[in-house]
Length: 384
Image (cartoon, rainbow, N blue to C red; front, top):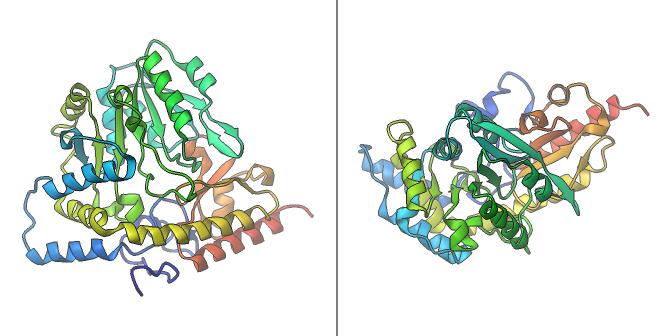
């Protein structure tokens, strides 16, 4: 087994894995929560081993090296110049969504977001005593994108915050520059703050596409954007809890930090260490991972679209497939596929029960077995 061997399954049983323990007493394949089954890059494991060998694990500050790496990374990859003072380190991206909801506007104000969407985009506003307005996305040329007309119509004087996801989870869309410019102009017209979840930014599957941070467009949109990023999805280190917000607006950053203070803990030192290992020397590993994920994606697109009752549109980014199961006319899709031996995320959790989300960040043999089970179950279910 090597760090770049994505084909060999890794036994994650008896590791308290959230993903695998859900089905630990069954034969169901876990294809739900968004972490991969791949071993982290050698640079991450070596950095952790070196830090652990030191033997002292006291309270820690943010390593200056990590701040430098993120600032340099934004400049190198996106030509986006940020100050290290704009960085706010967090033990997870979801808490960043919640903090954004609490730090923008007041109790009873509205938070707007496209739908379908990652569930915390809905729970975050609710738990922050805000009112959620969800606007259905539209499909254009096999891409799930924001319906800007409907979005603008849904904005009210009480709307203070827009939650945005790029690349989109669960649809896999990579937003193009004109689309981002249109969103930025809308935010300016209506004086909205945007919280932009960009955690999948390093998982672009289409070689001709490039992730563009919304806040990198110009200084005006940067001043009204909270950008959330993390190495966790890319390098499979979510369990180490290290994310960050980029908030160039000092007043907005102060409000964000004030809400955070005393409630959200600091990042632990092994989380910081893993992030340094990932950003210092993990990019070559990720190139190999992306090649593997592209092949998984291509296999899945080909095979899923052969199965009666299922439909899968092109996936531009992430390792998440948003599968339309509506034509199969299943009473309870999640239960049906679990009984078939495949545990996926129900579309209803994202706001659309016509779909299921399948995580293909796994070995090819496991993916092939999952597709086989799905095909067999549906062929036995659907009338001839």
